[in-house]
Structures are given as C-alpha cells and as structure tokens.
Image 1 (cartoon, rainbow, N blue to C red):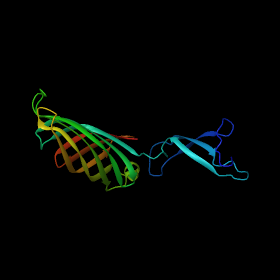
Image 2 (tube, helix red, strand yellow):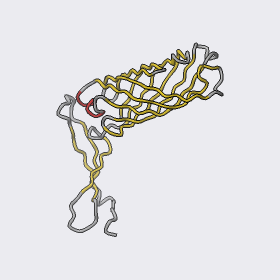
Image 3 (tube, helix red, strand yellow):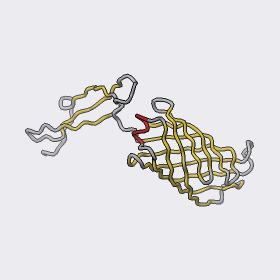
Image 4 (tube, rainbow, N blue to C red):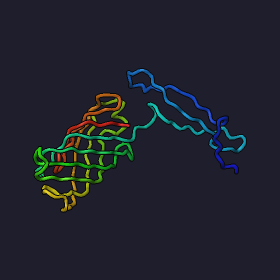
Length: 193
C-alpha cells in the first residue's frame, strides 16, 4: 500500500498564509492551505498543497442576472440568468435561461428560453480581475424557446444566437454587465467566485 495517501490529524498540517498580488492596492488577505503527504514512500519529501479559499484560489465561475428584453418575440419585459464556467483563461462555457412577457399583466405573449453558451474573453478571465476593471466577450448560444411570442408554452422552437457583452468591476466580487444578442438585450449584475 505504498501509493496510499494517509490523511489523519497527525499527518495533516493546516496553516494560514498571506498572499497579495503586486498590482493590488488592497491589504493582504488570508488563504487557508492544507498540506498533505503526496506519497507514503520513505525518503519522499513531496507535498501536495490544496487551496480551499482565499485570493490565491482561481475564480472560475461567473453568475449573472438582470432585466432583459426579447425584442424578436415582442417580450419587452423580462429577466435573464447566465452561469459561466472558465475552461481556459479566454474561453468560458455555461448555461442561460430567461422569461419574457409583452406587458405587465403577463396574460399576453410570453416566452421562456433555456440553453447552453460558449464565450471568448477578449481580455483573459484572470487578468480582468487583477489589473483591469473592464471585460469584453463575444460568443454563441443555442437552446430552446417555449411558447415564443405566444400565449401558451406548448410550442417549442430551437434557437441559435450570437452574443456580445461587457462587464465592469465594481467591487471585490461584483461586476455590472450588459449583453446584447441577435434576439435579447440584458443589463444586470455579475458575481465572480
């Protein structure tokens, strides 16, 4: 059982270390690191470090939501949610969903949508957060519309969209975002984690 990784109270060392990016003016923040032996073979000094939380942890997710308008199907009042996952520094993949109506009574034309998306970040995902407040992206999305511009949701129609958007950092994890596609326009907030 030489390859067995043995974690116990005595073989795990927990310590807190501080990290600061040279370009940040903020005060140093704490990151919790767990060190555990990578192998139980004698004479091996290799250690595996796992970052649980802190500034050294890579921010891979972006959750966005806001008010939206589906101008192609006359859904002028609506909401849209977007979840992006960073596959590579410039490429994200994710999910999107929205609900739209053509008036405030919600008894007229209504549309629901749900789909998948992929985006190319013109400024790498990591660099945006540390050095520049702006992020620009373009991409493609595909999915299904339920009841597009109709009073019932029985009709299902596939869609293929091209989108472009911008995000502006306003806090430690928060950004304002705006996105326009071939059928929708959205304005809202993004949370990066």
